[in-house]
Structure formats: C-alpha cells, structure tokens
Length: 398
View 1 (cartoon, rainbow, N blue to C red):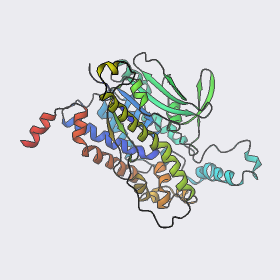
View 2 (cartoon, one colour):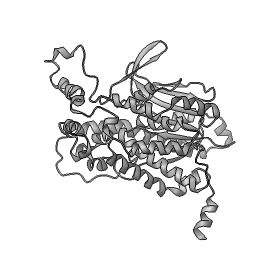
View 3 (tube, rainbow, N blue to C red):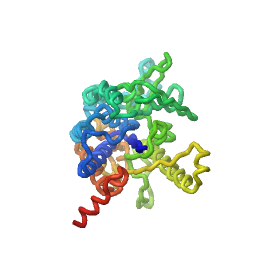
View 4 (tube, one colour):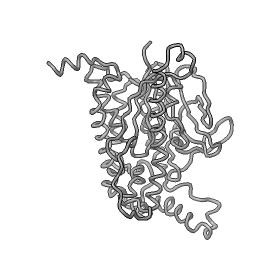
C-alpha cells in the first residue's frame, strides 16, 4: 500500500513566504528526478494561519502542482502590505491609532463604547486577494478527481474557547474530537481562511456559523496543542513539516543590563509563542512516539492506537526577526509610524514586524532562504519521496 504524504504549513503572517521557497525547491528536486510536475505529491494538505492560505492555494490547483507553486511564488515575491491590510494614513488612523487610543484613554472616550475598533489593522484588502488567488470550485474538482485527498485549515473560537480543524475530504472521514479540539467536515470557504489567519489583536475576528449559531474565530495557531495531528487523522503516513521560525535557536549574547522591553518586544515574544512553540513541541512528541514504537514488538504495536509516521522537517536556518529588522523601512510610512510608537522598528522589536512585513524585499529574501534550506536537504527530500538514490549516486560518480 502506497504511503500517503501529508504537508503541514504552520502559521506566521508574512513569515509564510519561507514555506513557498521550500516548496519551490521541493518542486525543483522532484522535477530533476523526473517527477511529472502536474502531479500533486501531497494528497493531504493542512495549514494554519498564513499557512492555511498557502495550503488552500496548493489544494485549489492540486491538478497542476507546478502551476500552483508558480502562482504562490508570484504572489509572495511581489507582495505589498496594501494587499493584506489598509496601509494608508486614513486606514491606519481608523484602525490602529484609534485602537491604541482606546487602550490608553478608553475611559474618556465613551462615544467609542458602542462601536469599538475591532483590531490594530484593517485586513479588508486580504479578502480581494484571496478571491483573486483562489479558485475554490477547483478544490471540489481536485477532490473528485483524486488529485487531492483532503484539505484542512485550523481556527480558534473566541466564543467557545475550542480549537477547530475544518476539513474537506474526498472520502467519508469521520470527524474527531479531543480535549478542547474539534474537527468538522465542511466546504472550505474564504471565511474559514480569513478566520485561520486572523492574528490576535492585529486582525479582526471572523464570524462563522456552526449548527445555526454564530461564533467568532481568530488565528488557528492559538490553542493549537497538536499542529501535526490533523494530517494523521486524515490518513497521512509521512509528513513534510515546514516551519516559519527556527525550531532550535542558539542562545544569543545578552547585554549586561537589558533595557525594559518595549510593547513590540513583548508582542513579538507573545506571537512567537503562539506561532512557533506548539509545532516544535509536537515534533518532539512525534519523534518520541516513533522511537517508543520502534522498541515495541509487532504484537505490542497492534494493541495501541499509536502509529509511526515518517517526518521530514524543514525550518529557517536564520532568525527571521533579524531579517525583518533589515526591511522594516520598506513598510508604508503610516504603518512604520504606528509600529515605531510601540518600538516595532527597533531591532529588539523586530519579531512583531516580522509577522506584518508583507513587502517584497522581505518576502523575497524569505523565499530565497526557503529554497536554500530545502536544497541543503536535497538528499533527505529525495529519500523522503523514495526517489532513485541509486540514480543520484551514479550521477555523482559518473
């Protein structure tokens, strides 16, 4: 029985450009090995936050994998912040400055109590971008033809407190439920993607109707205790996991007397905890499970619901915060001014900017880093897809 390969795309706002670079390199490696570029190597695709947008872009064109990668790369390599959120002076004043003022002087501004600002930034432009980028009817066709087995995106309900995995699949996969985690079979829509990518406080929450009632949802990285589990529930036997931050970062040289942290530094630290930590912990847990199962007899393994899952993890080899600090000046002036007010244009506050820097100078560097990192794992990619290692050895010695 042929193994089903799953793709896990984590969250991270503008950091998700890195994922596209990795996928570009994977497509190039497969192409060199003779893989038909139109065939989708990932029958099960799962995404969270900005990773959900990339996942949907791939899934909607699963009948032509090469074309899907090219289209995603074209978007990420030519990004402008204005494509994701209002970056003009009026837009920033109506959302960000008003929101920060409410936090500071809300007790004086009673007129806002009836209609408070919903978020730091207004991401209305993202709706138009998603409608241009995606062709959701093609998702139905891809599932029907067998080019895709399942697409899953995650979001977190502010209303119920539960974490939700919304999935659309080819077969009748039974929904699952765990503590504070619910899976629901549904037709994936733009609203599901907006909910998955609604970075807390920065982008507005999204209403979704479930069982006849309205719930408000935010970023899928929140309360995501097990980012890998949806792909396994959907039938994946091996996983390519692409992170949006370094999973094991070396210790930094610290100053003798550190200054008090800025709001941006605290905010960036909190977002990194939301977007990066759960994935790193889940990868460690999966490796421990694999190791434990390898020590068990066949009879013992038959008595447990756990199963071994082959996994290849590719994550940034450089700190994306540091890269972001070199590109903050490319943000539109109103956004840059807003971030400067909370320390987001300083090196120590660059983590916050790294999630909002939808500017091509930054996203292109992340795409290039993704290509570099994946090419550096070329042998592992080849082995992961069971592609002619003997042919590779012949070429090197020939």
